Length: 127
Image 1 (cartoon, rainbow, N blue to C red):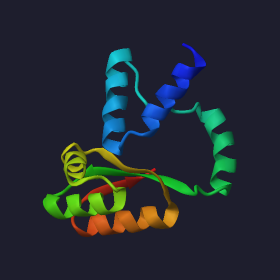
Image 2 (cartoon, rainbow, N blue to C red):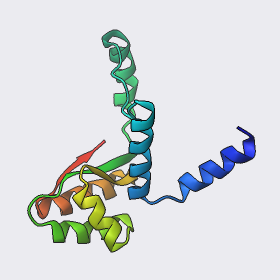
Image 3 (cartoon, rainbow, N blue to C red):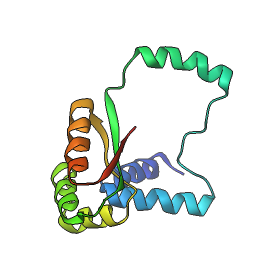
């Protein structure tokens, strides 16, 4: 594949919304029989690698909506507010939970989003 094609593909992926990107990843996983999840590290290597990682706290978090709860309308409004998605995209993200709301949110913003969404009954995971 020529370098220009790579650049066009990267540009196309960069312009996708969170919902479109989520659907794209799922399609790739199904087509090639793989998952985007990180494999578990071996215990010996994992223990050595965890010490430096624990010392350096993460600065960005992925905010994932695991379950919308019973008050989906309030959750949709908050997802729209925090993610920048349109109303129909926010609704699709909430109804298609689990879905990523923000891929790289600063720690304070990620905690704020988690708190607000949990107040209206949603289940959120920060990773």
